[in-house]
Length: 400
Image (cartoon, rainbow, N blue to C red):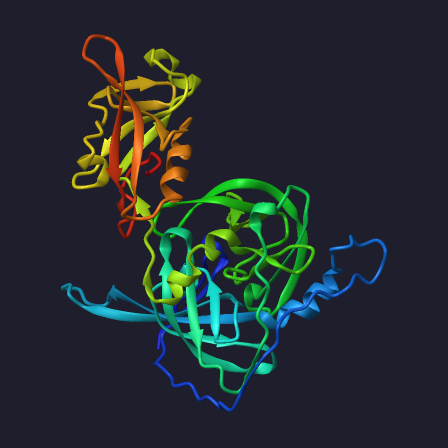
């Protein structure tokens, strides 16, 4: 039996330990279910804000609602001992993370990357109670997944979902999770920044991300980022690392409002893909001044994928390569300046606008198009958005 090296997955902080082992069964002792609704606790001293709680109070109330998620993953690889090729081995490993109990019916919210490619998922609670879980819904583009467990014999403590839109820089926050398999660990910090962007497991961009200095480590993935009242405002997902691979004290959480907009759909099962326009673009700013474009802001279309909403709307990509201070780009394509009447100042604006829509929805896109005479003319086109593919196209510019 060969032991595969330990691997800490910094993407989203999942802990992965690869071993060669056989599948095992899971015994369950199921009797009854009790649901405990989270209730606000009054602050214990005057130094706390009226709506706030001490870190200890948050921990006592919310820690029982944080699950320890373990995923069994099997990967197929070519055997190094087969000199003639064709040999295949299976490597079985475990990815660990956290989860958030969101109702009394056994629904648990976590990160998609915690359960990605899992052949078996188990969920553990306090006092050593473990049950097998089913992945009922997933959204790789926002790194979200919903699990379902049988509730017999369990006392569930659903956490209260807050409003991430109300978060402000400097607000105190608390993270509860299972870093490095250290169950139900509490860390504290503040909201360090808003409106950050991180990359989802499938390469798409996650928007409106919360940045925090509350220590988040491998194993915190899928756990809650809580406000001062103990409400979930984010799902801890990723950390920034140094060149040596260590944490630098910067963590990122998927906003809870993104999850709330999808939970009902995720609970119904399947994969949530989101809306997709089917093009890549480049932000127009001062770095492109040498191109003498007709506007100082907007999204310059670089590529349009065949068969997508953008292609059907006859949006044009750039066809001429030009070298600027930011590198080589395609020019001559359309410049997108608005979506449904809302100004588009950058590629990020365009991606956000598309992400806020649903597949099948028709949008009106305002653009500037080269007229072949050295000038541009304003045009509007309608595009019926499609569904995102399984992964982002292999390009270096923002998707739409």
